[in-house]
Image 1 (tube, rainbow, N blue to C red):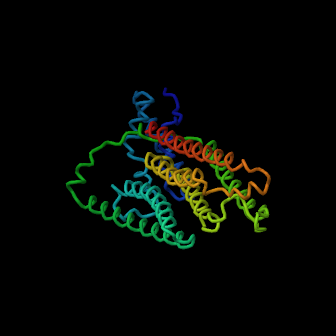
Image 2 (image 1 turned 120 degrees about the vertical axis):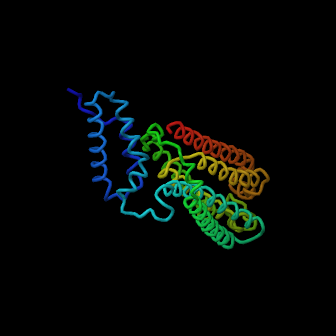
Image 3 (image 1 turned 90 degrees about the vertical axis):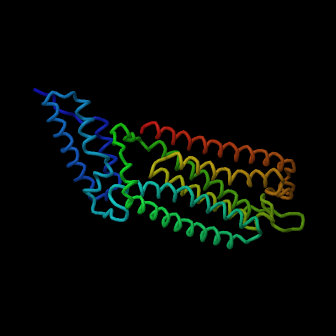
Length: 322
């Protein structure tokens, strides 16, 4: 008499990975079908005297990569590149679009703004450049995969046997989601406070004009809009990584985004171009310029470093599960 088979973490990981790209309305039925299929196949092997762990591993290996198995159930056609390479194509395209596009978006915006363009022109150039970059990436990636798919010599090299041990862990994202919400809330609060101090909370300066803590030239130039622009890109990037999972490419893109923000932010602050000394004189705290400057530099460096380290840790942790 054999002991009834109970799905283990490996089976759960297989089913979770298979369902990831399927429409929500199909998942419940397909999950039940997959679990029944796996359990029955393992029961047959157990009755034949095979060890439970070995039986499960063998059954999942015979089923093949879960994403390719899911393609048989999916209502979405995978004819663009072909079933053998389709999910590799989607994975590569996703990584490129989620890393190269936001980096180019931010980089082109900074370069255009430094060249003397207005905030509106800067955003327009950055958006246009990002769209063109995304279209180019999509086009050339599709062409390359189509060539590989249709080249028998290259196709014959795909001899790697899929192993269930490569399945990613089913991780609890609730902790990361809490951190993500906290980080977004922090950025929103900081931006709101600065806007309030610069507008509603402005004080009367030497020439009776209303001034805020941000240097007037910097504020009117639209540089603060570029900072908000960066914050929006950063939030979008982290939300994308939350839903698709971290990778080495995501981590590297995060580091590049952090550097593109830190360098100009620290330079503007340390060179005295960020804060308005007249504001601090008006509120009776002339030495506040130096104090706030030091705080801003430390906070920018610290949070950017923590963000980069966190991205590396998450990417490394996911890589170890494969």
